[in-house]
Each structure stands twice: as structure tokens, then as C-alpha cells.
Amino acid sequence: MFMQKQNFLQQLGLCDTNNNPISKHKTIFTFVGNKKSGKTYVTTLLCKYLKFKYLYSYTKYSRPIPASKPKEEVRFIFNLNYGKLGIVSEGDQCDGLRADLLFLTATEQCDTIVCACRPSNPDTLQVVHDVANTEGYQVFQIDMQTIISICPTNEKEIAAFDIATYFF
Image 1 (cartoon, helix red, strand yellow):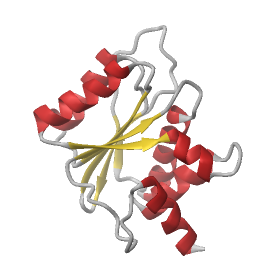
Image 2: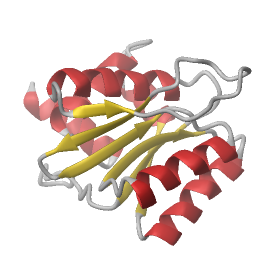
Image 3: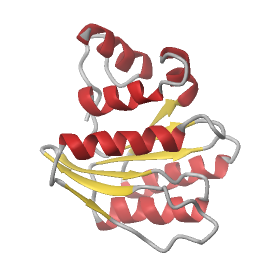
């Protein structure tokens, strides 16, 4: 069973062919997918699983959110043995995403960041690359279509759990 999990991570590009996880240091991992592909859902589940895995090693942060935005967006910072991991689920609005990424990179100095972007709004992905270049990070894109093609129908929970368990 573990080998299947590693193959899943390999298909996402999170492990090399020897099942070694890729570097997480100074990396922004971006779930990229169309509307309703499950970016926010997987990011939120990933955060939930990590909260159980690293009890008492995280903090929630917030910033003013426009009333028109959904309240289920998550913003957490985890203190892990290799450094800080910042997670933000909002990725549809450039201004909010830029504010979150700058906070996580420049202010909190997170080693690793997870966020989401929508290809139909390429400006959000450009914001990720701009912040990464300015703050000295690399960007790693995780394609939601790949997750959808690997996981059984409507079971993105498996992807979030496996990423939380075997990668972070």
C-alpha cells in the first residue's frame, strides 16, 4: 500500500523516481485547476489533516476579507521540524493572494507555502511567480486534473490525506 502512495506522489511530481520527496525549502506549492475542480477543498482538507498531524504546532492568521468572499477560506502557519509551512486556500483574487503570500514569505518567513490558483485567471499564477521571484522562492504547480485522474471519482480526500501524511 505504501508503494502506491509513493507512486501517487511521483505522479504529482512530489517524489523523484527513488521515492525521495522533492525539496520543500523556499517553495510555493500551488494547486492549479479550473473552477469547481477542488482546489480550495483539497487545500482545506490538507490543512485539516495537518492540524491533526501536528497538534498544537500551528496558528491561524487572518486579514480583512471582503464580505463577498466565502468565509471557508483557510489561513494557517504550521511550525514543523524543518521550518514553517504557510497555507492559504484563497487563490482567485490577485490582491488577496498577493497580500497572503507577502505576509507568509516576507513577514513570517515560511520555508514552504501552499496556495491555489485558477488558470482562467492567469494573473493569480503571475502573482505567485512575482512574489516567488521577489522573495527567493521556487514555484511548484500541482495540477488538479492530475489529482482528478488519479483519485477515484469524487475522492479528493485521498489526495489531501496522502500529501499530508507522506509529504509534509
